[in-house]
Amino acid sequence: MKINTYELWSGADKSSVTYTAYLVEETPDIKNHNPRPAAIICGGGGFFKITDREKEPVALYFLNKGFQAITLDYTVGKDSSYPTPLYDLAKMLLVTREKAQQWNIDPDKIILIGFSAGATHCASLANRWNESILQDYFNYPKEKIRPTLVILSYPLLDFSYQYDSVVADPDNQRPTKLSPMPKLDFLTGALKTVVGKELIRENLQEHSPIEHISADTVPTFIWGMQNDDCIYNNALLDYAKKLKDNAVLYELHMFAMGEHGLSVINQNTQTEFSDYKELAIWKKLCINFINQVLDLN
Image (tube, rainbow, N blue to C red; front, side):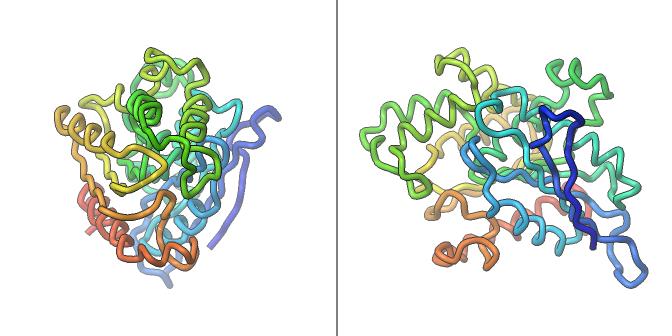
């Protein structure tokens, strides 16, 4: 296996945007699908950073399921408002398709796997791959930046709903399990980072993934937890309903208990999450969905 890290864009101003490719080389000693499907992995981190917990451990899991795996360090922090991270994901898809033969990848079987903030970006590309905001920027056939399907793990999908909910929450001064700051500050700070403008309804809706669902949205797998204390999860139900209303193939799994940031729930993530090891079933459910869509069985 080869593991290499590259800059996604040319130019010093975007040198922090990198990706790491985990590639199993074609060999007669390994009998597998050749070329292999590919998984582009986008970890979360509140739009401020990307946690290691949702990068290499995820890549290793999907490698063992027959994928080539790529972790993307998309733009985060003060310069990461939309559409910048959307451009990063679209560019990563273009690069993967351009290098498909070299990397032993089937260009028609490239999926996005996102966690938390990374899932927000994956949902955005799943919905907006054929919009002018991307077509005008890249000048490529729109199908080149269309993912085959997306996996959304505890995503933030409706910016307006999140903002309204945290402002109205009487417990919004309590910290979340992942951050010492009050939930109000944590969530509004994340929204300000990704929106890049004043948090008024028009700005919140402009780039909110739920506002861009259409009949062209790609197949979508979603999972989350009812007691997630970082986001308000009724939005996942609303998102699934809108997918259904637009005749988009989807699957939603809402577990009763859990924590934000569970990742793949194994010994490569965090030991304190061992209490939730039964939630690791999300991976089996996810693989079943992928196999159905990509016809890998």
